[in-house]
Image: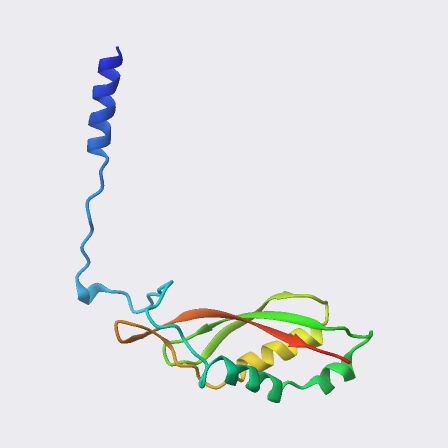
Length: 140
C-alpha cells in the first residue's frame, strides 16, 4: 500500500511540473509596471531639493485660516505614481496623524504641483513606479 502511494505521489509531482512560458518581444504589454526598477525615480536635484520644494511651497496660512481647533504637529503620508514621463498621478493620502483635512488637502496640492521627476529606468527605458513621501506640518 505504501509503495503504491509513493509511486502515485511521484507520478503526480512529475505530471504537475510547470514549463517556462516564452513571450516574444513584440507581445510585451505597454502598461507593464515593475516593482524594483534598476534605477529609482528621483525628484529633480534629489532628496534635499524635494525637502526645499516642500518647505518653500507649503501654505500654512490657508491651513490656519480654516482650522476649527488648535493644531499640533501633523504628518501626512502621500502615495503617488510617477509616470514614464516623470509626471505625478494618482496622489492619495495614505495616512495622517490627525483629522486635519486642510493639512491633507495641502499635502495633496504640494505633491500634485511638483515638477516632473526623473522616471525610474529599467534597461534604459523609463518605467512607471510608485512613491510615498511624508509631509510634516509644524504649528508653533
